Length: 450
Image 1 (tube, rainbow, N blue to C red):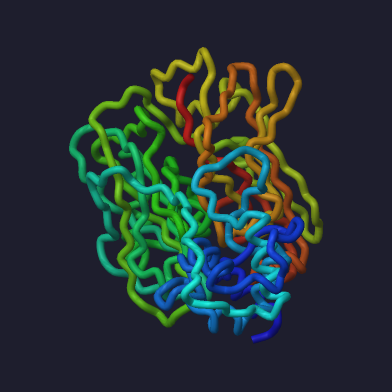
Image 2 (tube, helix red, strand yellow):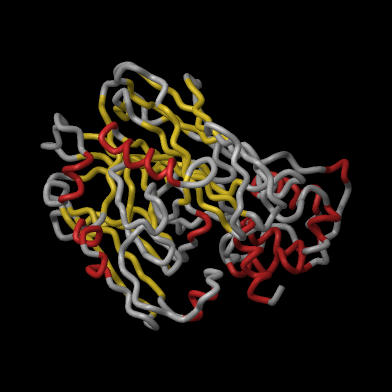
């Protein structure tokens, strides 16, 4: 494997040991830092979710020997800020279930490495770090893939599995939690609700594809089919995530006859081909106080005419953006509940920002009616391999005259194609679409009326 391949493997498989530049030094001198007292609690809390014998990481980080043997590599990825896979910039807006390393934690690990990674006394192990990863307060149903699937594509296999919705009356989903069947190969999940009107299209994709499910990439559509499907995102799962309840008293309406679509990204470099049966746990209510809705935020013209979001071959720093009030956004009318009263505005509770392999940076902002702009979520360094939903500690209020804005920057150069692991690194013009070589610029948001 060449140097580029090794770098891709480390980033894709996930060496979860750092995320930002050090800012100062810890209180202790470097000589005083030890693995058992100072570093092991950090590694256990922030890294072992992937780097265990049965985890998706390519090696374990469960002992002093395992960590110290790759100390130089650990230091490198911390300095680069590529791990752990938490894309959100710090200090923009408080987020729930943040699994990134703090500045002090980064400084501690790097100083320990600089001091030649001493083990210290196993009897003086530091107290475990408490990390809030969420979780469901209860489970009312588990929806599993209809049958086992063994990934066939290398290094990544994106597959969508339709799952029959089990309730024969209208219910409201009030929380979700993904359960990977085989953590060795399951990289992440994304979940979509398919309304009854779109299920025939999904079933056609499934029937026409060999084996369980069908290949999909940027969304719920069959890869490179050119067919778009009306579907609502309801979040996803990534390593370290344990799911979460939706905000109290809220939920998503699901009509009988719907389908759940479970999209699974399999990483097939970490292990030999193995079967997987992933599932989704969820909680439901027959009624909720406030009906919520997921809305994709994008210029509908991009989806109608892919050339409207053109990214020319060979160009870096290509910027596309969309800004509108909720009433102006054509896409919003498709997803809002018909009886939702938004006269007082709305709240954004979470955002799932999304681009493809040419994406470099993405922002979500609110342009206030008074002329000010508030950045609410920012990914300075986009990585298609590490997507997840980000939940705000406090909901973001949006007044009727405020504009919701999403900004995306793209790099369509040979260097970026190589970083993305593309076999063909000759740039061509790219437009909006769900295919592997297409691009997107969208924020999926969980919203409620104010």
